[in-house]
Every structure is written in structure tokens, then in C-alpha cells.
Image: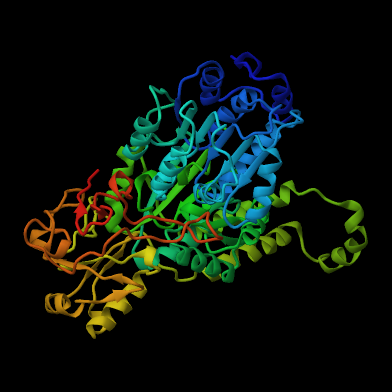
Length: 616
């Protein structure tokens, strides 16, 4: 078995990583490091999150950079602030004995003047988020003509977050004679496009199978009714007394709401999302890293760069909008060769998504059952008994309190004392779950089957979703107010990232065609399309061509559409520019648009009212 010294790592770097406890290279490190040190070719490294990709490119980068020169020679692009800081911290540790090494992180939300000052002092390696780097380029604060190495870390996530144009802009400023190293967990078409456009005959290294999930993670899904989602989450948390996990939500609003509700219900939790300032984010992460929090509730964007060991569970409170995001989420656990558990809470309509992920990552999901009160009490009780058995007794600290304690308990036998201790814990959970219903959906008798829910009600497509700050409740209220109908008359609502589906009565749908004409929501022209159940195809199939007014049909030829789409692209604040909002791209030019679960998400062409059809 090879050691790091066998891979050609420099002596100073080798000394530093030995102090960090690096003994045996991971597969990606073992195969990537020698090639990056020896070859002058571009490089693509595909491996799961948590497999040691930072050291795979960081160690050779430190060895290849001429630290005698003060010029910027290497650039590392990362999708988020957290990952940017994490990479920088790792490189600083690896270069501990390279006295002249200067590594500077640049990202939004921090003082740009201080970042510029650090770069001008002489920084050989710059780790940057795309938005802030473009700010520096436009200010003339960073020289790009001396850069010899460019690393695109988490490339799939950067493109998934809508940074396609930023990457194009950045790479256009680089000299022709440079090497590009691209590292990614998955290889969607957007990443392949970047590789073909900016890399010359790259060597491609794949650890495991492409897009495959990590083998040391167990995947479970729990089927519940939508109204029971939060109660199901609480039961799962109660059933794992020693949990140290991350709960993923789709939106910032949901993240904050779930974290606040958990705190009110006595759980040791906090939230991490794009609306927090950098100082707030740092405080939350410091508490989490020190394990003063049991669970962190986070969005996909905010959780990028969380490199914390010993995370036991990843819980998907909502499945992500993009299948690749599931791989990144789950990769927060089972790091450094350890095992972990990934749990998805789904309703009956989302079972097809689970089947899709299974095929995508070539991993079998196990159907779990939300535990009942007795099971939770048993787990909590045995955890308490284990703590009592393992606790270290501070003889000196408790000595003065023992006499009155013994006096108080002198009439109790050992059996009576144990019964009372057990009852304190057991009664607490029995009271909490007294008369609690079974939350599990019986798929065999639900009438929905294993393939998921199929609605027979007509529905309306609307080009508003969670990226517009709307959740199901808000969408219901919005539609009811526009149509002046009772909220109760509206059926199921499925809120996606940049669009939603709303089921309602046929008469209301017909009236909606006129009522929504000219409607503007937060500066965006609202576009709707309606479809009837008989013309609706199965999930995963493309539905028809372009609809009237620049829209597209969702149902063969039977859908109606209204409203022309506005020019240009939808946009939202960038996660790394100016402080805080997470960036997501509901649609983009060419292949950079987000992809969904078989529903074809609108991907606008620049400056055009038409939509590009896109399917998996």
C-alpha cells in the first residue's frame, strides 16, 4: 500500500500532513496526486463528497506553485463561502512549513478592501467564489495573466447554482498556457460542456462509478402524509438519542421555520441559510463543529463546504429539486471512510423520485417505518441506561452532596431506585406520545400503489415557486386572492423551484385564464398553463411543444396556456456577492439551466420569449 511519500509530495508538505494524521492516501489521492505532479495535461477527477478531493488537488498545487514569487499563480473556484473558507484552511494546514506560502480566500459577505490588500501583498494561491472574483477582476485588483493552475472544485454544484456565465467570464481572462483541474461528485452534461470548452484532452479519473452514491451510506425513505412531515421528523430525531446530523430543506423560509419549531420543542438545533450574515454563519458553524448542536437545519447552498467529521445522519426533510443534489447532501455523512445514514421523508407523490434516485446513484433505498411511542421510549431508555453505566464519577466533586442524597433515598431498595429512574425517562416520552397516531402510509392499501400518487384533478402550471419566496400555504393564499375563491376549494399544490402546479376545479381554471392576464408578481410577469387529467402524461415524459404566447404545453395537445414570458433570464441574488442571499438559477441560457425530476423545467434562451425543451 502506497504512502504519501511514495506519491511524490514535497518534504515540507509531507511533514505537515503527517502531523495532521494523514497516513494512507484515499483512492482519489493515490491516483490523482502523482498524475497532477507529473503531467502537463488537464485533469478531471470524479469522486464522491468526503473522499479527500481537497488534498488530492491541494497537495500537488502547493508543490507545483513557485512560492518564491509573490504573484498569483493558482486559482481555486468554489461554489460557496463555506467551501471557500474550508479549502483555504486545509491548504494553510498542508503548507504549515512552507513559510513563504500565502493563500487568500475571497468571497462575498466579507470586507473586499481587506481581500484586495491581502492579494496585493502577494498571494500565490487565491481561493474564490465566482461572484466575488468577478468583482475583483472588474476592479483590476487581481492579475490573471500569471495564473498557471485553475481548479474548479465541486464543478457540478457551481453549474447547478447558475454560475455558468461567471465561469465563462473568469476563464476568458486566463492565459492560454494554463492547466485546468476539474473535480466533481457527478458528471452532468453541463460539466461535460465546460470540460470540452475549456480543457484540452483532459485525463479523466473516476473513483467508483459515475454519479454513484458512496458505498458506506445506508439510504432509507419513510412514506408519510404531507401534513405529518414535521411530526415524522420529530419522531425520527427522538428515535436516535445520540444523533449528530443535518436536516435539509428546500428553501430558506422552510429552513428557518423548521429550526425555530425544533428549538421551541426542546431540540438542540439551529439553522444555516443564505440570509444569515457571515458572522452569524460562523457562529452557527462553530457551535455545530464543537457539537453544541445536535442537528443543523440547512439549505443545499448553505451546506456546501460543511466538512465536519462524525455526522451520523443526513435527513432530507424535502427531497431536492435536482437529483444530483441528493448525492451532495448525503455526502455530508460517512466522511473519511466512516459509515452514515441518509433518510428521506416523502409523501406518496414523491415515491417516483426515490426510484429515480436509486437508478441515478445505483443504490437501493430501504423502506423504513416511523417509530411509535413504545419504540421511541425503548431507545431513549436504553440510551439513558448506557449513559449511567458509562459515566465517569467525580468523587471529589460530589462527595459533600452524597450524605443528604443517601439520607433521602435510604428507604429505597436498589430495584425501587432503578424503577424510579426508568420511570422518569419512560413517563416523559409516554406523555409526549400518548395517543399518538401511526404516521406511516400503508402503501399496500392506500390505493396509490408503489408508483406514487396520480391525481385525477385538473391543474394549473404557474411560473412562480420557492425561489420567489412562496411555499404551499402562501401559494394557496395567493391563488385564492387572485381568483377570489375559498382556499378550501383549491386542491393539491406542488411547489417547485421556479414553478408550481395547483389543482383546482375546472370552472376556476377556466376563469384563471382571464384573471391572471397581465398579473405581475414581484416584478415578474405571471404565466399560467392549464391541463386536464386525460391529456396528462406520466412523470418523466415530455409534454407537448410550445404553448400560446411563448409558453409551452404540459399535456400533449390538450393544454391551454396564457401569457408571454418576459425577456431575459429569471434571476436572484448571488450567494457570494454582497452578503448573504443564496443564488439559484431557475432558468438559464443553453445547458446551464437547472434540471428537475422528469418535469421539464423552462430554460429560457437569452433575450427570447421561447423556451428550450429539456429532458433527462
